Length: 68
Image (tube, rainbow, N blue to C red; front, side, top):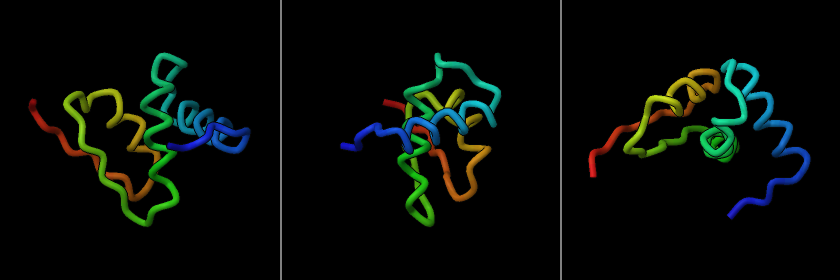
């Protein structure tokens, strides 16, 4: 679990801004922000469309699609 402190909130905002997304994508932006401390991060999701746009503005994050 990660705490959304001021630093994390600003990071999420920067990701949303860079991807030209609004607050409807805030949960996905939090996932991408959580990946940033890692050199390489992989996100496995069943709904890759929105999160792919957010990940594209952050180097080193890879999205993998999986069907349930």
